[in-house]
Length: 62
Image (cartoon, rainbow, N blue to C red; front, side, top):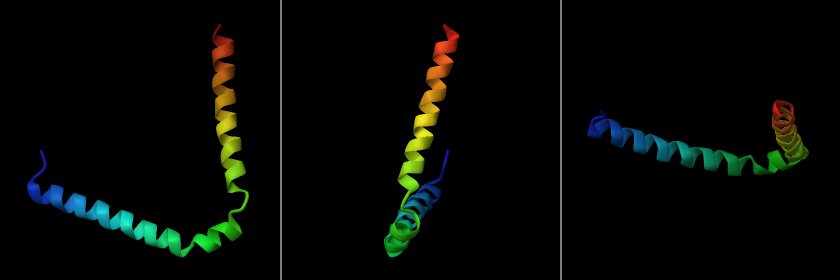
């Protein structure tokens, strides 16, 4: 389906992309701690809301 060159390029691209993302994240880690303090609580709120919607769906189905 893919040639060997395409697979090598894709693998190289993925490795480089992940390496750059890790480097940039570590570089901005102090900014993330300062500006995004309550983001974990928001994430938990969204997860709780989605679980609540599924529970309501299951309850109303019966």
